[in-house]
Image 1 (cartoon, rainbow, N blue to C red):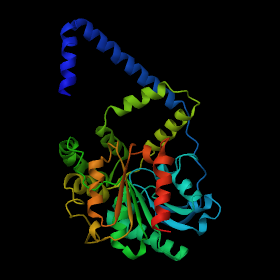
Image 2: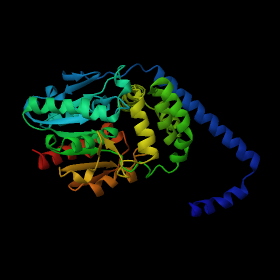
Image 3: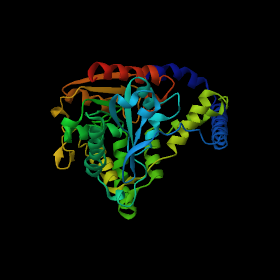
Image 4: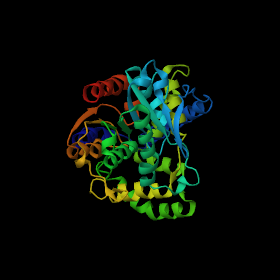
Amino acid sequence: MQSSASELDPLIRQTIPEDFATAVEAEARRRLSTFADGVAAYQTAGNSVRPTEPPAIWSRGSARLLDYGATAPGAAACLPLLCIPSLINRGYILDLTERRSLMRALAADGFRPLLMDWGTPDNEERNYSLTDYIDGHLGDALTFIEDDCGRPPAVLGYCMGGNLALALAVRRPQSVRALALLATPWDFQAGHSAAQPFLAALAPGLETMIANLGILPVDVLQALFTGLNPALTGAKFRQFADMKKDGEHARQFVALEDWLNDGVVLSGPVARECLFDWYLRNTPANGAWQVGGQIVDPAILKHPTLLMVPGDDYIVPPASAKPLGDVLPNAQLRTVKAGHIGMVAGGRAKSMLYMPLATWLKENVT
C-alpha cells in the first residue's frame, strides 16, 4: 500500500486541484447514473422463474422438509441428506435455478437431499430460541428421516445452517452419519474487527427494537449485512446496467436479487443469540454456546466432516470459518476461490462445490 501511494505522489503533485475536483465529480455522476440505470432495469425485469418445488414430506409449525429425491430417478432410495440453510434467508439459495441447484445436482448424483424450508415464523415461533429450532424442528425432522429411510442421514449446513447442523450433531450424535459444513462461521470475531465496534454501538438500539417488536425485521438484517461491504450494492447494479438483459448473466442476477429481497424476520430470542452472544461475545469459539443446556463442543464429534470455506467470503471470512478445522477431530478443510453466495449458486459452483461434495460423500459416507 505504501509503495502504491509513493508511485502516485508525482502524479498528485502535477495535478491541478480544480481539474482533479472536476474529474472526480464527473466520475461520481457517471457512477450514480449507471447505478440508477441498473436499479431501474432490475425493477422492470419481472420476477425470476423459480424451479418447480418438490413435495414436502414433513412439517412442523412453519417448517417443511422438501424431498429433492423426487427430482431424479431412483434418488428416493439413496442416502438421505438433511440440508439445513440459514434462518435468515430463504433456503432456496440451494435451489436457485434449474442449472444452479445444489439440491438437484446431489439428487442427480445418487443422493436424496431433504431441504429444511423454514418458512416465516408464526406467532409461536417468534418466541423461539436456537434450542427450540435445533431440539424442536430439526430434532423432529431428524427422527422422521431415520424412521422413513431406515438409517441416519448425513447432515449438510450452509452458513448459519452449518452452526445448526453442528449443534444438532452434538445433541444427536448417533442420528448423524456425517457432516458437510459450507461457509460456516465459528470464530465470529475473526475477520470482522471493523464491524465489532459498529455492532456494539448499535446493540442498545437493536435490543430496544427486539423488545418492542418481538422480532428483528428483514430491513434491519439487510442493512447490517450491507454494512459489511457498503460498496457492493453500487458495484453490482452498475454491472447489471451493462449486461445484456436477456442473457444468462442478467437472469442469474435477477434470480439472486429476488432471493436477497425475499428475507425472513428473526425471532427475538434467536436475534439476541446471534447478534449479542455469537458476534459480540463470540460464545461458539469461546466454548460458551449452549443448546438445551449442553455446550456445543465440536471436539466431541467423531463424524467424517467436510468444511468448505469460500476464500473470497466477506460475510463469513475464511478466518472465521477455518478454526472449525482445528477443533473437529475428523475434518477435511477445503478452501475454494469463491464468495459466500457464489460457492453455492455461482457460475462455477458445479465444479467448485457440487462435484467435490458429491465425491467426498461417496468416499466417506456411502
